[in-house]
Image (cartoon, rainbow, N blue to C red; front, top):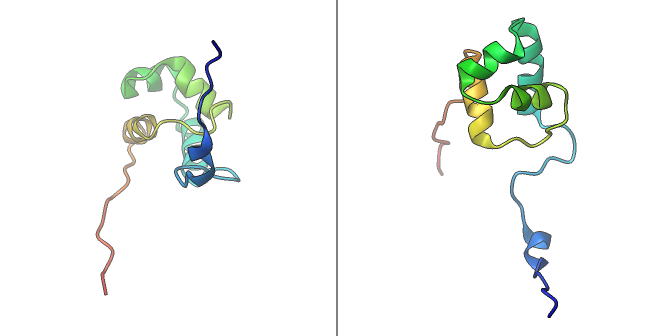
Length: 88
C-alpha cells in the first residue's frame, strides 16, 4: 500500500515566508556578530544550542522558529513590542 500525502494546502499557505531575506533574521545575524560574544556564551545566555546560533549567524537557517528569534533577541538586549493598530 502506497501512502499519499495531501499537500494541496501549501498553495494557500500565507504564513511566514519571505521571498528575500527576512529583515528580522538579518538584524539578528548582524547583531550576533556585532555583539562580539562567543557562540557558546550567547547560546547559554539564550538557552539554545550553539549550533542554532551558528546556523543563524552563518545563514544556514533562513527561517528560524519565532521562539528562537525571541530568545536570541532578548539575550542580546532587544525585544519586539506588540502594539494595537488604530482601528477605523
